[in-house]
Length: 232
Image (cartoon, rainbow, N blue to C red; front, top):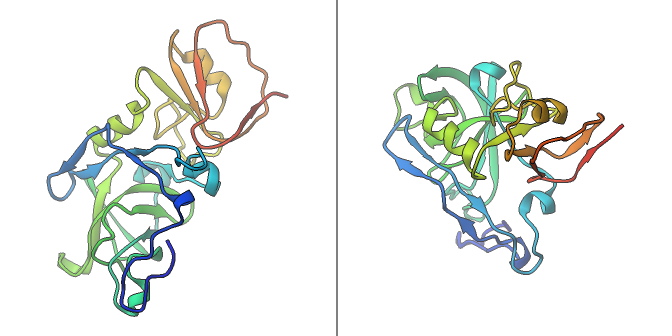
């Protein structure tokens, strides 16, 4: 997003950087710990590209206990008036991670109204551990809060979003335990193929996978966030 005007009016992105939203998945607005939504974006109508390919970056998702964060960062588009040119433009701030309670997480980060929906990012691994939903001023102790990826319905919706039976592969994910789940992906394509059922989709994070694999069952391989290279 470009800088806003001196009166705080939003200046929209270039037409090549705008993407339609696909809201097929669920949205919940049930207060702390059950406030979340899952959606994707469709290709830009001018470039026919998705943002992960244009920007070259994306956020991994992880369980808080798997990465044991000490510091987290919230990056998003809050409402700001100091100065007004910062209104609704991308801003970020890091602070201490305070811990989790069931389906929500708590942290001391400088956020603003309108930051809801921003990723809560572990600064060490750069993986997102939840979704920011509550700013600090209105909460006891001045702490911010968000919905954790420990939330079963949220995690399940993320995992199954492509449709059908899906397993995930990412050779740079920080999870210490692997199972093919979106929050604990396989580190190799070979493992995913070995454990996959016929007709399954294997979603592979961009990168090079230095391995030789033989596929003897019907599978769909997809690369949703960039180029994947497999081979020795």
